[in-house]
Amino acid sequence: MMYAMSYQMYKCEHGLATAAEQRAADLRAGEAAAALRDLRLSLGRAFRPRHRARPARDGAANTVTAPTRVLSTSR
Image (cartoon, rainbow, N blue to C red; front, side):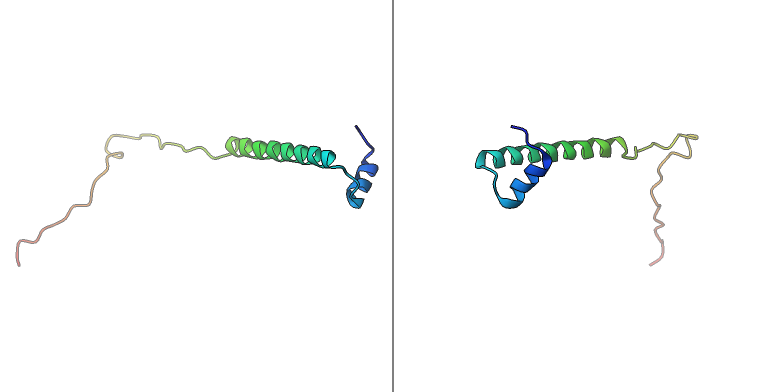
């Protein structure tokens, strides 16, 4: 049953809602919260910065060299 918003607010403020009405309101609120969560997650995925690979310039620039250790010959 549909009521005017003012009457719904009056019922809520004065505790006139039946248990069935309260359960229905809780269900609607849960569905709205889930929809907002899904929207936030999908927007987060849409606007997340992508990982970009560096373009290869030449073969020598992309080789990874480990630091070399110089062993001393004297003790």
